[in-house]
Image (tube, rainbow, N blue to C red; front, side, top):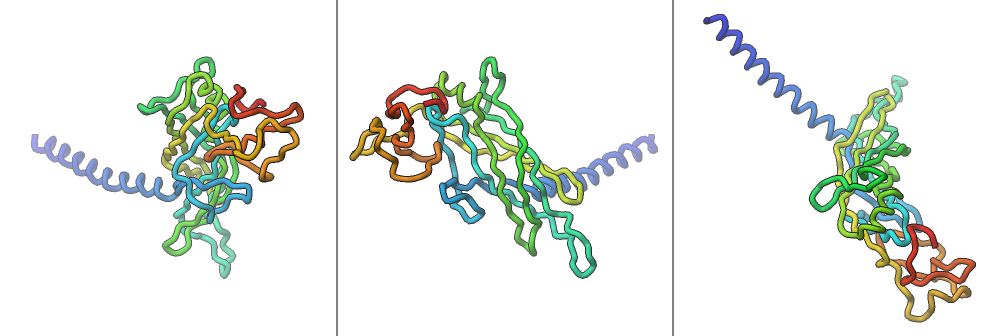
Length: 244
């Protein structure tokens, strides 16, 4: 009996030590590669220094998908050494990402015949390794609302949804690495972001927009960007996602 108790105590002690060893390792692995936030897209381009974007908006009458640049952080320490000709292996190459679009209660949105609003895409990007105590940063363009999900919102209406994304990459040393899931709120509209100027008509084909570029998300846009060779569309006209 004494031997059995000794074995039981040894197993308990082993489990406790294993928990102490494994748990911090899991936390550390998640902390090495992470989503730091989203960046505002603009016609001038997007960079690490662009303004942060805390939430998104998409008008599915005029835009078929929602894409955003995510800022990714890398806390892996540098391994390269010029003096010893040791190559850098801690830089991360972005390979793909997974997305789930969740409703207000946290369930994956049902798209009917298209199935649940969960999808994966490939992408590209590099994230430099950490420098001293500061992580390295890089950008990757990801689609958080795809075309099938946008079409679903055309029939079911808008509202606030959450895009949950996980980014996957591979270090130059050959190790696969992923971020922990990151949530981003997006408000869905149907015919809300298009605005008509007070000094002009959306339906005047000779009237050019007051700009050379616009992005169909995150802000209101001038209806004159919708002009085409047939005379254009007003904000009030019904339209399919991305078809004018």
